[in-house]
Length: 286
Image (cartoon, rainbow, N blue to C red; front, side):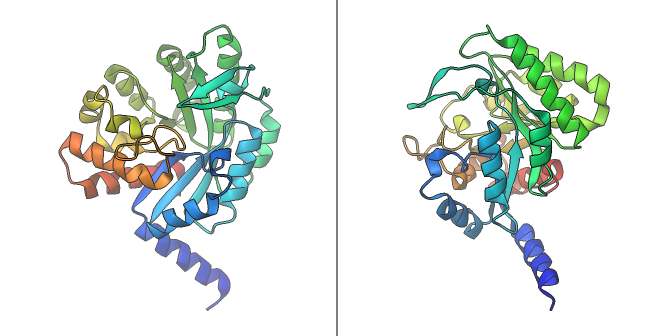
């Protein structure tokens, strides 16, 4: 058997066995600098796919390089997070870091997107958690990344914190311009049910992570929206789900998110796993 045919068969076999997809991980971040390969191998052994998300050009490039080391099971998303548009000192769950300021350069990301392992643009969007004084540059950059995603016919991974009204307005305006080519996912969803329905109408899925295992605020949203509109993620190394709270989060823990969704929706875990995995395959064309 020719090597190329064997490789294709191996990929097909893995994808057939794929049990879950962590649609938003950061194994490309420094928290995993010492054991990234070990973490990804563990996921492969457990039939869990991993989509690593960039937050600026350097981490986007690292996500692509990491994905290209694997025949399948690991993919990359590239983009500029709103937190990197101005200099801030951040602290997320005890992890402190200073943002590296970057101006969005569409051509640099366009070149990076030539890799077949790039499956979306993001994470991009709006974040007012630390204030709204730079909201205009955030909005401008968000629209630029939307334009690039549509140009490349890739879905969008949207970050939204304390900014659901503005994100919805921008996506609604851009949807009128671009139609079905504009689609994607609302990452780490913490918004109201009414907003979730509106995002679904615009062609955006809703992604939940470990937060739902220790906060009851989002049970109604999970119960009310169709499973066909849901993705699961970890956002590792942050937001570690129960029963691993207090530890570094890992992609393999996405199974606890699927279990919680099944519990809230009163369905079998296998159904939650299968449908969310098919949703990921369909959106990201993996």
